Picture (spheres, rainbow, N blue to C red):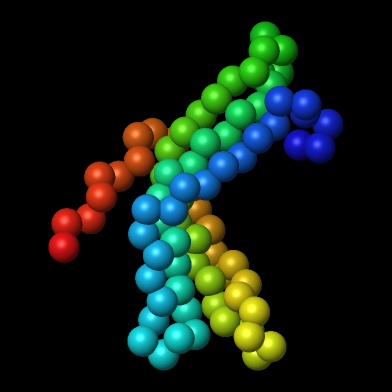
Length: 80
């Protein structure tokens, strides 16, 4: 990735929730990645959705403990 001048990764959270106990949380939303196509050598862009789960650490910081992303249109916003 560091060698790819076209590499870019963005996340846009649509939903953020924290457990009642305050020790776990997650973000969910849209993501976009841009990189150089190995065959054509031209920039290619892919977008989709992601979910990242965080756990609060003993020092008060948060650490991502699970993460998944998939190509395709982002999910529709949740209805409340």
